[in-house]
Image (tube, rainbow over all chains, first blue to last red; front, top):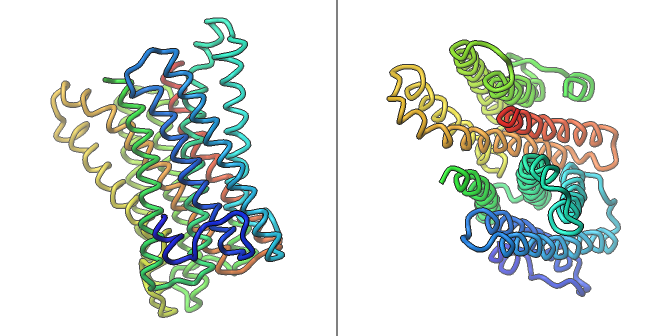
Length: 193
Length: 193
């Protein structure tokens, strides 16, 4: 992804006069910040041996950093639309992306009040757990779907048919998909280990 | 989706001289045939009360029909590329889609030899089960990701910015995503019920 943005697409800078460089903040932060950190947060809870309380705090904090970077990444794309005078929120990518982001924020808040502060009763906590896990997994795949539709949209708009850059984008997309599947599998398998 | 293809896009016909009508076979069969039937097959095994053997056969046969319709759907898009002289397999959508389809075929074959004919030993079967489940779930989300990148590509190519048709496509995409999540949740929750 860095090769794509730095070599082919002119670099990454939020506070730039060049709209393309502002746009590039968006894929960089959404993947490297958001999807990567959220995936690490999911695995931290299940696959890293540590005290339960430490796992929980790391799980919560990594999500929080991911969400914070996500906010900057989304702000970057609105700033880019502003600069080139494009309409916001018209595409399937934007609909999926923003829905995912808002729901992940709500999931994080609900997790915080249920499992950390103020903690719910043991019974409520264990009754909520399957929902917390299944929704978390659904949100991971939603985030991956958002990333892939975003790459697909960019590839089609740039009209890269037959270029090496198109293959690089496809490869990046497949890596993101594989990362999502690997996170899901490693968390699911930790359950059986 | 039918409103999109019939009202906005001129209908569905495999054996047509109009490339657009041939193309329309692809989204129709890939979703209504492939994703929908595969989702039903997953739920049939876990959420419909019936004898175990009947559940297994329905699970296997629904996948088989879904795969058969998928083959026709993929053939349609190659035929369309042929008609308009476009290059095959250049986009992220095509890479994800074909990978998913081939892996689902392999998963089906592996499931058949492990669980139906010739059946493996009880120990092997129960050792394989978590992998069969987790890979199946990953493949469901991969199929959804393939569908969404496909809709995204079509929407961008048709340049529908601001049209009602774009909102219809977005809505269709969100429904496919919700269907995938609903299948995953209902199978996961059946485990806890």
